[in-house]
Image 1 (cartoon, rainbow, N blue to C red):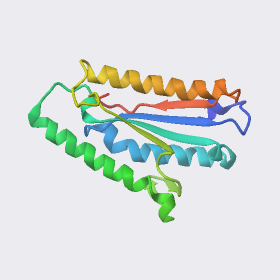
Image 2 (image 1 turned 180 degrees about the horizontal axis):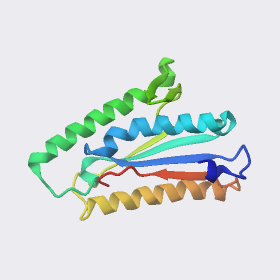
Image 3 (image 1 turned 90 degrees about the horizontal axis):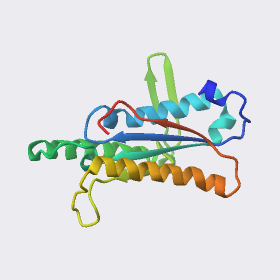
Length: 174
């Protein structure tokens, strides 16, 4: 982040996008930690930069993670996704409850009073009727990529300064 921010004005917007799967591998377990760690790192760099930062998540539900159909494991993946979503839901309400996320990661302390994400989107591998797409993972990735491009181009279209954008994709199954 220091290298990316070098030479940028203090008021430049920073968009952080976290893309991860929720089927229960690395991504679903690290999403909350990675978001709060990123918030703390930016806060430690500059409170002014932190005030101009948006942390967004694009979360792939199990049907969008590209697994081969497996009824025996599907229930497990859905349970893992439900657990991750419950955790995310809890941390999406920190501000309204006046709570602070506090955690020690070795010598690095995180103490953030904002919600885990400013913006969160769930990507599904099926259409509105519940029928799976022919390639659910590819379709979900394309929808997420299009959404991010739309968000970035909206700033340019409105004549605002383009934000600095950072995309995190933890080693995961998406």
